[in-house]
Image 1 (cartoon, rainbow, N blue to C red):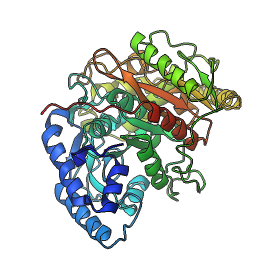
Image 2 (cartoon, rainbow, N blue to C red):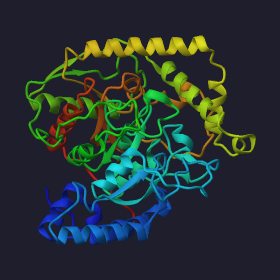
Image 3 (cartoon, one colour):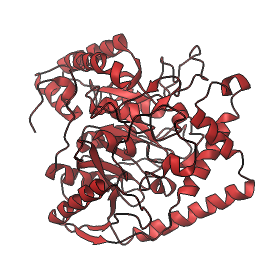
Length: 469
């Protein structure tokens, strides 16, 4: 793969190769990325906080280490951003909300932030999110509407929409996002990037999400190799997360290029219930599945056999919104996004019995998928049923489960089951919008979904958007 002439268009792996050879430096790369942010962020609104001086100081320290032949970690000098739901020492984490006071001590790094610092990443700033990450598009009273680099009239998705827009536009090759019902995979699909929702607990979190054990953290990158590189950093344990998994000694770069010959792949174009898959999405995914077979996989078209769990997902999600709502005083509540307020109002209606019933149904779904995956190495689906839709303000549609997530029926089931799932671009619509192909692995099969996505990506490289000048 040739190296782009603009360092802002380089992947993390390309930048690290340039640093090793002395052909470019972390300062040069950071300057290029900051210039890209200055040029395009006013229109895209991918960042809500940019730390120019801190980033350049970090890049200078990294450059000195590279000149001494002693990089401090596997991401030393790589420009990286953090979703504004994730604590970052020295910067406010406002969660897309006017209710969070920026004038407080911001002296704690979340585990993901801490691991990125230790690995030498150059932290650029915070990326936009809807209020408290409450929906699958990125708009908020605090930061306005975030837009898609492929077409600024379209949404980048959400809730990691700022992260997706930043990576797609070359405003830093790496970003870390969160995914509670598709919030890494939806925007990665809409913006034509790679995004991974790891197995629950593989990337530690602190504090834990008020939306509970559907909420994962994961990498959002220009390509699959960068995500594997990033996962080697993010998966390190952190004692603050009591739900985190034991240490994982695997190197996710090892075997990444070994292909999928002989793998058993279940292909489900609708999961058995998705009725409104856009025809161009369906066609692109079907063509991608033919490529998987050509790569040597044994593909069987089969549905997992569960009913649409939309009501389980939104029920648990609305309860989380109600939980957050009750941490706010009346003055703060008056400042909130109407979508978040509507979610909280629905959450208030659930009884204790209904909550228990939702969790029992979730457990049954998880058990069913564990059993289904004993027959297959992977499950393949579309990532989202539709291409990116128009970027819209908060409160544009009355809040219902269908309005919230009905257009993304392939993402939320695998938050309920906690399985690893990723999205890789598999084509463009006639209007030039990206389409995503989703790989779902068995629980703890994070390396497996990365390897499959890498095999497909090598056959069908990820395109980049052409940015307006």
